[in-house]
Picture 1 (cartoon, helix red, strand yellow):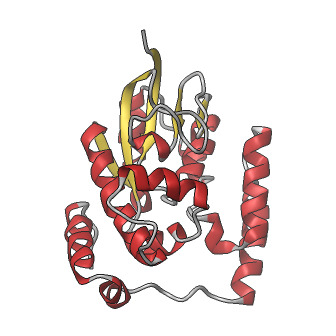
Picture 2 (cartoon, one colour; picture 1 turned 180 degrees about the vertical axis):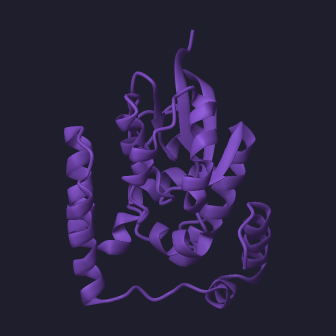
Length: 230
């Protein structure tokens, strides 16, 4: 018999899932990042039903009451995906239409597209992480918890710590391992240090089209389907 849990939140990696873990912890739920908690898990690896995963638990052997598909805009996500470790790419290549010989940015684009398509197949609800403040009441209702505006107001909007420098990412990782919520003032200070040093160049649709026109068109259509405005 499969072990039952309340919720699985999955989708493409680098889509801001870590802060959902922190948010749910503030609501008293044991939902962990890439590890099974008493109430569930947040993991991109569980989009596919494999017997093993490169990070944390696999989906095999578990049954979830709710499966949510969390998405993030591809132009923000794809450049970050290129920093995946080789262990992740070996796992992805088993399930995704990409080859080890593909250029890294092309692999990242293919992964974003195909992994989100796989998540659609298993999810009962999808939301855009950029709009999380707007969908928060429905998010809570669906999993049976009471919305708390004070928790939502403390929720960090800079959803990808890698965009804001290594120190911020290390701080958030440490807080998560210790089971404490990151202090907003500390995060603002650490993210500001990155902003003072440099700004990350924007990744554009033209650059994605240069990578592969067909994949670009398919991602553009998928992004439109997810309700993003251009």
